[in-house]
Image (cartoon, rainbow, N blue to C red; front, side, top):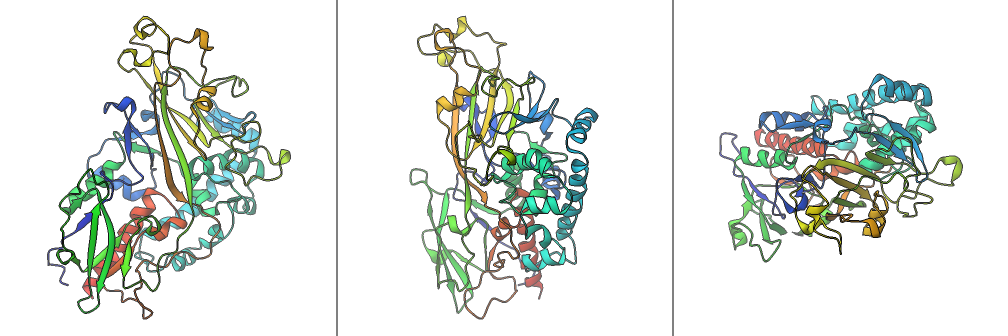
Length: 491
């Protein structure tokens, strides 16, 4: 194929929106209050996302700007019984750094240096001679990243002189909030990714706008609510036919051609985990991407006029607005493997609780407690409500959530404890145990002879998720596949 020829691209999206696991919902079902339901932040070293946001002129906001509180931000790490660490103002002030060094010695500095080295090696994947890559395992070996992926985070930290105390209290809190996995479960490379938080940011109104803008700028045909059901290879023409149906019958898909003969493509890119797609292949694939276990993560968004309960969290001297969790201290339990228990007396029933913003919704009676008089007699326009996000391994009941709030006794309660709630279960990211090799199906094999590395064929981007699972690395693999396709056309 000549690169001067026009390239017609069609994007099949089974949802009614672009963004996949990056999507927003509206608090109070009011579009004036958008809130991230999925992937919430990206960071300074996420070169593709930062460059795209700037190129499309999207409004970038720091996490400090996005967190609009009427109270100081305080971050705490809770082990189910007490806070093992509290960062007083949510920043990297000299005072907070001094407290870390006083409590954990040089481990915070060793962690920072290890993170810079490890992430620095990973960032070479964006550049020649490592980019573009045809083998993720080979590239990880060439970049000396296998020592990080072959061991658990706990082993990787200990081998680099980082204390178990710091790993348990601080780093494990980060692996739990980011990947719902403990240090003795997740591999060392992803552990370091969790610590690369410098310059955390998001797009005002929703990160999905990055991916929506990518599609718009490409000129591709976008078919929303369109679930691909089959991909058929014509052996003689080496072209591919796609069949798709509306994902939601009540919402017809956009202009899906009725005949598969209308859908013959030279190249197909599978841009989501194949195990969740329910796509059939004809003829059958000789080597299909392996199914891997994904974390089942429960996200609960809700609003309340009440702050978090100090008594529920055993009355700390300063009550955090954001609570990360770790497991009970190693000296008081046998294992830190269990991330599914919901017994607060032993282990936290959630991975994190974040107070996202302070809101001032319109006054109406919908927020009155049952049996209470009109809310207008109890709440005023300048009375706040708080928008919370909880990550948990199991769904939390309303009574469990209310127990975490400073709610008055029923006889004294005039306002509903929870005024709006939205729940979502995600297959959010893979479990990330140690690996020495990774899925090699960047180009999918249809027969035992293998595939030529030309621009045609079927390509796969989600194999990178067991290596590193982020919005940025998904975009890196997409960029890698696009470059390999173009180079194949040039041959």
